[in-house]
Image (cartoon, rainbow, N blue to C red; front, side):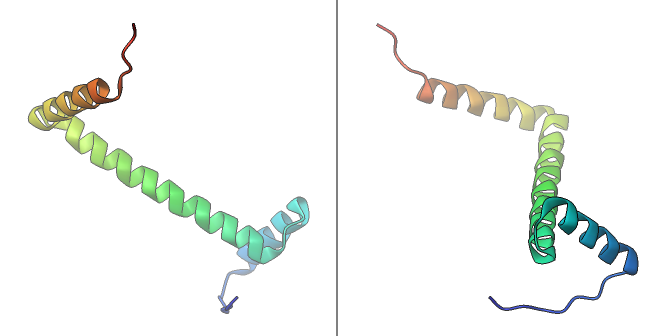
Length: 80
């Protein structure tokens, strides 16, 4: 796996070393997990912002509700 050198503050290095010691993970694993967590948080924040924008507009929200109803009808099961 390719590697890179990244400069970090002394505080960040201390936290990284502490987390690695606490978890038993290598520092690289701690960084990988932290970056993935951060990436996911950004995705959710952006999705939430987009959803809030739709929710704030009456027409957009009505279209959303209508589409949800269509999907609910398409995915519901038929009971005998």
